[in-house]
Length: 103
Image 1 (tube, rainbow, N blue to C red):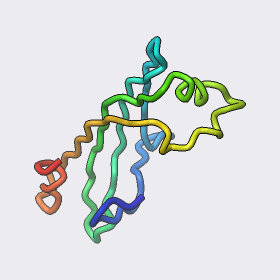
Image 2 (image 1 turned 90 degrees about the vertical axis):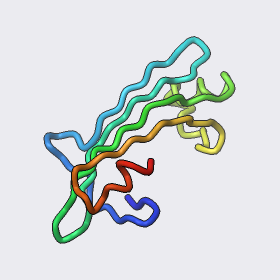
Image 3 (image 1 turned 90 degrees about the horizontal axis):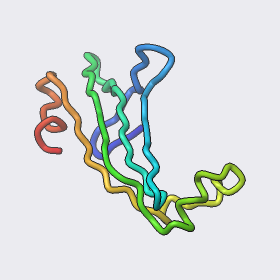
């Protein structure tokens, strides 16, 4: 995983999951998303940065029904639908204050 200007060593695994996510699909098939993961930087002395996203996946009904059907799910290009997400990152490590204060 690479983010602009930073290289991440790996997603941290505190148990068998590296991240978690949930989605609530509403009547028009838009989805309310909530995700979180813990990043470890690739520095000599690693920093740990929790990342959380919340928001919506939206698009035309005909498009949004395809990911819900296993036979059609691979036929959806990511550019065909939209995500509107709020991203938050935080850490107590002073070297990485910018994700905490600039996002």
